Image 1 (tube, rainbow, N blue to C red):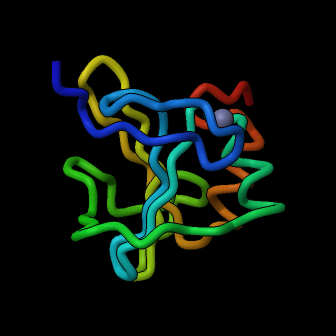
Image 2 (cartoon, helix red, strand yellow):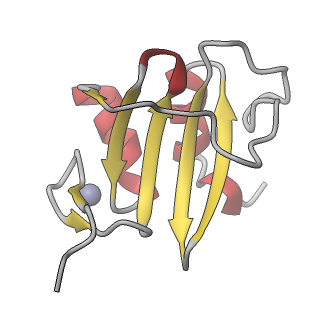
Length: 113
Ligand SMILES: [Zn+2]
């Protein structure tokens, strides 16, 4: 059986199947990174921050045009953190990796205010 293109978490190396986990991308420069869980975005951004060049990175479908962290309009250098779950892609946008880092530290979409 052909395996779908998977990847490994850029922080811990755990295999992440296509359609699962998180992808952090910057469409403008075709940058991407893969994570098995939101918690691993935080140390990766702080300590490694070593991006891959991916082919044809696009702004995710259905992405809001504002930062999930600040509510400001996203600029053309925006980053997106896309949660892949049960065949659904849930994107959140940020104007900087710092915004993504703060958002992930706070627990992402499920942050308790
Ligand atoms: Zn991981």
